[in-house]
Amino acid sequence: MHRRDFLLRGVAAGAGFLASPGLNGEQGSVARARTPIIISTWRFGEAANKEALSVLVEGGSVLDAVERGVMTAEANPAISSVGYGGLPNREGEVELDAAICDGETQDAGAVCALTGYRHPVQVARKVMEESPHLILVGKGATSFARAQGFDAQETLSDGAREAYQKWREKHPKADGQPEGHDTLGQVVMSSSGAIAAACTSSGMAWKLAGRVGDSPIIGHGLYADNQVGGCVATGVGEEISKICGSFLVVELMRRGATPDQAIEEALDRIIGRVPANRSIQAAFVALRRDGLTGAGSIGSGFQYAVTRDTETRIVNVEPRVQEG
Ligand code: GLY
Image (tube, rainbow, N blue to C red; front, side):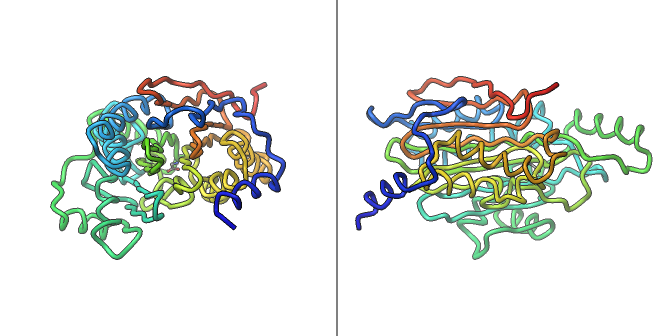
C-alpha cells in the first residue's frame, strides 16, 4: 500500500476526529501554493518567527531558521524565562535547557542545565551534528560548548540578579516553591514541507540545581516529523513530560486529529489524571504538514505567534479550564 493511501485510511479509520480546524486552529494552505508557516509559543514568539522567516527567505534550512529564531529570545535580557535574562536556580545560578529536532530524520540534540553560555540552542545543534550523543548535561554540556569554540558569557542579567536577591530576602533558606516556566518553543515548516522544532528555557525560577524540565527532552517539549507535523510545549515541565506531550500530539495528528484536537486530548490527560493540575499552566502549539495550526492551554493568558504568507500575528488562546 502506498504511504499516502495508508495515511488516508488511517484518518478514515482513526479515532473519529473531526476535520474542522477547531477553536484555536487556523485553516491550512492545502488548497494554496505552499509558503513557510512558523508557530511559536508566547508573544515573544513574534520576534522569533520574524527572524526564522528571514533565515528561510535568505535560503537557510529549517534547522537554521528555528535555531536563529529562538536565539532572539535567548539574547533578550528582558525575557525572564529564556537565555540571558532567565531567572536562576535557588543557588543563584542560571541553568539553561534547549533542544532542536529535525523533522526529516528525527535527529536531535539537547543540552540540560548548561551554565555560562547564552545560546543553549546553538550548543544543542552542535550536540546533534558534532557529537555521537543526543543529550549532554551540566558540566559535560559546558565543556562541550567550550570545545566547540563558543565564547563563555555572563548569563545572569542585572534584572535576574535583582529578582534573585529579592527572592532570597523572602526565602533566606532558599527553600521556596519554584515559579514561572514560559518556554519559547518554535516549529518551522518551509515551503517544501521540511519541518524543524526547537525549545529553549531557563526552566523554573528558583528550581533545585540540576532540575530538568520538558524543554530539552525530545518528545516532551518538542517533536517534529515531516510526515505529520510538529509540536512544542510550554508550562510545568514535570506534567508535560509525564504524558510525553509533544510526541503524543504529533502521534494523534498522525492518526487524523487536527492540531487543536490533538492538543485538547493531551491537556485532558494532564488535568484528567490529577485534579490539582487544573490550576497549573501547560500549553502546546502544533502545526500539521497540511498547514493547519492549533494551540491549547490549561490556563488563561496564553498566546502564540503564527507566521504565514509572511504575515505574523499573535493569537489569544482560550483556556481549557475556565476560572470561577
Ligand atoms: N517548560 C519548561 C520547564 O518546565 O522547564
